[in-house]
Length: 314
Image 1: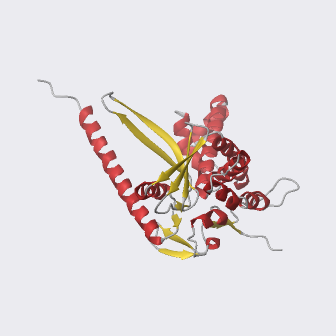
Image 2: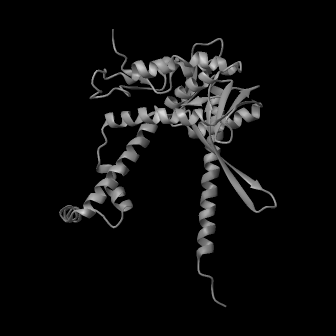
Image 3: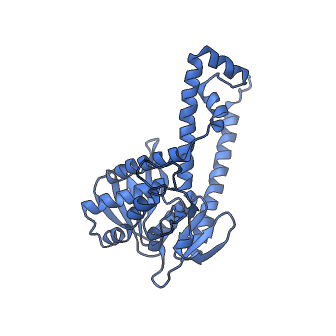
């Protein structure tokens, strides 16, 4: 029996929730090239040997993360999705879905890069503290022209020189997936149902959202943070810390389009869904949103620069 070398970081079982009833192919849009088409979920969002360890734990195969861990978790998704759709998900089902989502959040290459960056920063800080305690190491660092004026400066200079082994990243990923699953289980769930239109997804399925609420007449505003996760073309999940029970909310076509805009905004490269038209529309809205945000950020900088200038004396 051959061992699969191509590992899906957006599972096939998850992608199948975004197929139309009369098609076995999923629509995709490549934000780097502008190309859109349709293909089997088997062909999308995967990377060679992504979860293969070089030196696995004793008694385990190098591919134990891909199979049995991820293959087992991914295999539960279709039935869990069905229980959410008919509003019959049990407490145990919610726990199992949290496990699936915990891995979905943590298994992407972009998340692995975050792990690498955090690991480098931690290692650089540890080295920096050792240098300050050891005169010989301190002298060597100065002779090598390292900036040791602060831990931040040293980390910025030395961080990229530090090598983080792939096995270490994968071990952290497994721990992170478990802790994320527990946080999801303990959070508030709002299931959003697309009455019309269809949700899309991406190669970065967990989308962090920050909404700002302005309280008119009170001179203050609050920011509400949550995660938006498309579950299928008809369902999306809003995860927040505001409640514990599961609620269901029907979404209009405009509401679905706004969520799709946010999903496209958070994507790394690939958008996936029922139709190419939906994907391109979401991408165009996300591009406009980023453009508007950049203009606003530039305007704020100009205002701040003007207000920080010394005022002329009379």
